Image 1 (cartoon, rainbow, N blue to C red):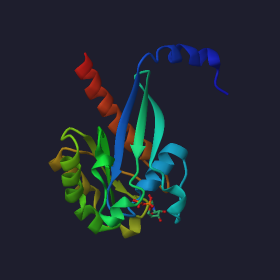
Image 2: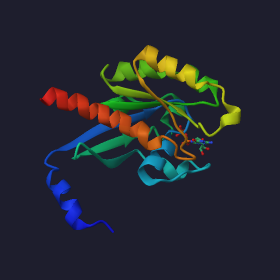
Image 3: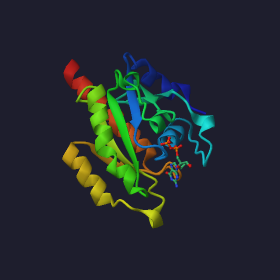
Image 4: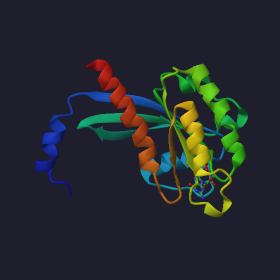
Length: 189
Ligand code: GDP
């Protein structure tokens, strides 16, 4: 159990609260819902979508001793009908643009998702390109170098993750939230 004497000083420094809206985008079945399930609840779902179609999940994080809340939105399958609405993007300050390293078609769609993101939201949305399913080594169709190069060309952060084995999942979300926090604190100061 946590020692309350150790916890207290930190809690007292939580004088400000931040709430950041972050959206998950990318083709169907790249693993968006599972990345969120892994990050927020440390769960993984092999098949069923119906059990996890959450709209958004609020996750508390601590950055520089400040409590930051990330409100992470999942398309919950909207993209299958090409109907990700402008309301979905409204107010977003961060985005995880996900593709599946074992399906090149999902990587080819990245440009379209970026266009859509920039049409519906601020150009300055902090965005990380996420190559998910890094555990599928045998089935890899997109190299790490290709992912990195595209991210660099588009001015995005880049990471490869696996919602299945948890690799880099926290880091993907933390990279975005930390950068938003830093941009915001520079503006405030
Ligand atoms: P979404 O449509 O983008 O939200 O994708 P889902 O999260 O529903 O995942 C689609 C399918 O890919 C499901 O069968 C998941 O179990 C599987 N999946 C998701 N992430 C991973 C991963 O990191 N590795 C592997 N091997 N499968 C994954």
